[in-house]
Every structure is written in structure tokens, then in C-alpha cells.
Amino acid sequence: METALNEITLVLFTTLAPAGALAYVLMALPLIVRGDKLDAAGRRRLDNFLSIPVVVAMVGLVASATHLGNPANALYVVSGFGRSPLSNEVVCGAAFLGCAGVFWLTSFAEETRSLTLRRTVAAIISVLGLVFIGAISLAYGADTIITWNLPTAAASVWLNALASGPLLAILGFRMARFYTPRHRLGRILVAISAVATIAAVVVYAVWGALLPTLQNALTTAAELAPAFGPATGVFAVLGAASVILGAKSVTWDGEAPLWLPIAASSIMLVGIFLMRFMFYMTHMTVGLGV
Image (tube, one colour):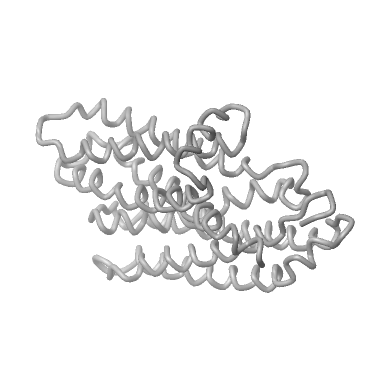
């Protein structure tokens, strides 16, 4: 518990940043794929409300910066790019959010803009977002931390993003008043979130089953996080509730109440936050320490 509380800002970072990055990718897809078929007003609204996933991811990254101790230490983080997984994570995040922020600011420009150029730039930023999620998923694969150096660690980051990102994107689309015939896009996003939630529950269940077998000279991982199993059950319940609310928000007759997508994405993020807290509770090195 003490370890997880000391790393609470990283818990927040690994909860919000992947969700925001994937939501950005999903919200940018209509601009990239069929931007020429959207009316100018709809395209501008979609451009403007890309700020929602950017802000969510930014809050996570800013929270993680508290671990630098001194802002000047950021230079040391950047200098480790390419050889340090943690540096890769931070640099990729800064690149994605910096480009996404500039792209969003240009959406308010009044002069005529090249649609082809904006679609190309949106595609490049989306790739940066996916790279950012990948960097987060690989940042914790340290050989000396036996509870984290598992395929389940990387898989959980991607599945968390796929569970929460689509619901956050639905909120962004609702704010931008962007709809497809019969809410087809929204239904697809809810389906992605539902499948990812089920897969995440399975991964966490497998992870929990492995914890008693992971040990050092002092303890087992199961003793470090005795509530891992019950927490997985709570995550399953919260995930199911958020998916149901998300489904309700895209099948509503007309424009769904704003509270539905807000509640759907918020509840999912709470569940993911809980499991990320459990993740940091399981921190255990191969030596005489935890």
C-alpha cells in the first residue's frame, strides 16, 4: 500500500494518458478517413473537441512530472531517449501532446486551410499517440522487478486504453455533435470497449493467479497485494456498468444526455485506476526488498 501511495501520480498517469491518447486517435479517424465528406462546421467542431482527449492525457503527463523532483531533471530524462524505457515514455508523450496541442490551436485559424495537409498531420499525430501507448506499456518491463516483467503488464496497458479510450471518444463526439447513420461508429466503439474490458478481466485474473508463485527471499507477490482478486472483481463490475452506459448513450433516440457518456468514461477510468493501484502494490524486486 505504501509503495502504491508513493507512486499515486504514476497511477494517475498510466490511467489517463493511454485513455486520452487512444481517444484522440479514434476522434481523429473521421477527419483522416472522410474529412473531405464532412461539412466545414462539423469538421471544425470535431477539430475543436479534440481538446478533450488531449487534456485528459496532459493531466496524466503533468502528474507524472512530480517524480522529477526538480524541473531541471527533465533534461536528464530527455538525454536517456533510446536507451531508457522511462525516457522513451516521457519523450513520446511530450512529442504526441506537443503536436496534438499545436494542431488543436490551428483549428481556430480563420484563414483557409489545406484539408489534405490537416488530414495528413492528424494521421501522423495519431501514429505518435499509438507509439506513446506502446512506450508506456514497455516502460515497466524491468528484469529486476519480477512481478512487472511479465506479458500481462504490457497487455494490461493496451487493454486499459482500448477499454477506456472508445468511451472517452464517444464523449468527445457527443460534445462535437458528430454522429454517423444509426450511430454506427458509436456502436463499434462500445463493442471495442466491451471486448477489451472482458480481455482485461481475463488478463488480471491470470495475473492474480500468478502472484502466489512470484516471490523473493522476503515474501510473495500475493502477500503484497492481497486484494488483487477482489479488485479484479470490482473492475469487472465497473467495466460492465460503463459499457452499458456507453451503449445507452449511442442508442438513445436522438441526442443522448451528456451525463451518460461522462458517466461511462468516468466509471471506466475509476476501475482502471483501481487496477493500476494494485499494479504498483505488487512491486517486488528479486533482491532483499519490495
